[in-house]
Length: 110
Image (cartoon, rainbow, N blue to C red; front, top):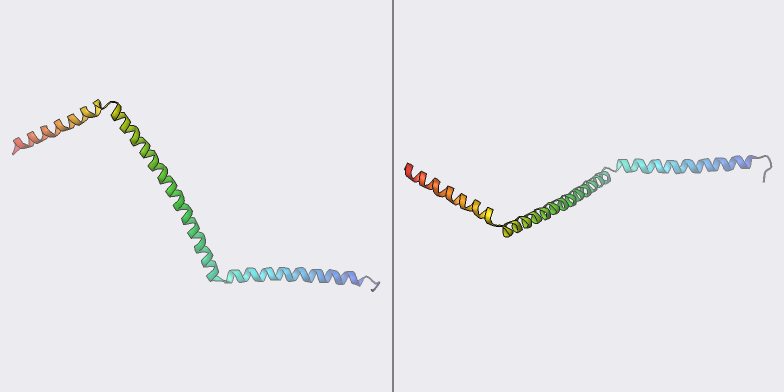
């Protein structure tokens, strides 16, 4: 209830003090967080653990996809043999003949 205008100055000072207190509190909290080595290590370990989980999940998904692809290719290969086994039978017969010839040659050398 003063009319000289000092009331506005007081309010401005109070507001400045309030802002300074808030900033000081935030600064103190930040410094306390930096000084808490145990909590920082725990946080770092938690982050590393989460990264490892994500990498493991990605690896599992990739391996499952590769296994599915291999399974499908094996099925396709089996269907090819079932449709026309002649080339594969000829290959197997050739392998047997080669083994027999090698055994004969080896037997003659002794």
